[in-house]
Image (cartoon, rainbow, N blue to C red):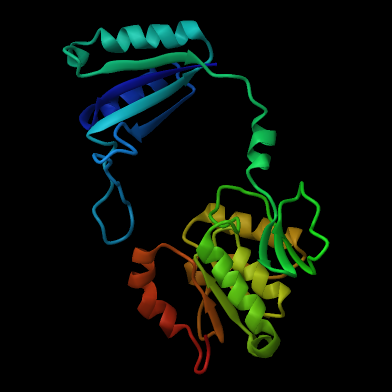
Length: 260
C-alpha cells in the first residue's frame, strides 16, 4: 500500500477526490485541515440548524490510498500536470509506503474495559471482565456512536446505576433517544428498566443496538424515531449539544409526570 498526500484549496477537494477514486483507482480518499493544530485551524460543523459543511478547508490535505507505488506515482503525476494545479495551487506533500498493520489487533488495543462504577463496567468482547464487575455491558466499537469512553456516556450510565436502587421499580417505560450503539438502553435494562424504546435517525445505529442488545441478553425495541410515543418515566438522550437543544421540547414532552 502507498499513500499520496496532496495540498489543495477547498474549491478543488470534491473534483480531485472524485478523479482519484473514479479515474485513478484510489482505494480511499480522506480530507483533513492542513492547518490543524495551529492558530489557523478551522472547524467544520454539520449539526441541525447550522449551515451544511463545506467539502474541505481553505487549505486541505487530501490523502489517497493506492494498492502500489506505481499507481500512487502515476496519480500524482497526472494531477500535478493539470493546468488548474499549476503555480503551486496543488502541491505534493508526501508519497510513501504504508506499513503493514494488524488493524484488528491495533483497533482492539485502543479499547480497554471502562469503569462506570466499581461494580459496573463496559468490557469489549476480547477482554476478561474485571473481578469486581457485577454488572457488565459487552460492547465492541462499531459504526454507531457509544463505546462508553466519552465522558457524557459514562455520566449517563453512572446516573442510571446509582439511581436504580431507588428508581428502577418506576422505570416501567424507558426512552433512549439517539441511541447510537444502544449502550444507555442496555445499561437501563441491566438495572431493572422495562419496555425500553431505543430510537435513532441512523439505521446503522438501530442495527447496532439490536445486535448489542442480543449480545447482552436484554430485550428492547430498537427503531427509527417514529417507533417511540407517549410518556416515559425515564428519558435518556446523549447526543450533540445543538440537536439536543433543538429537540428539548420534544424530549420533555415524552417525560411522564414525576419522571426524569
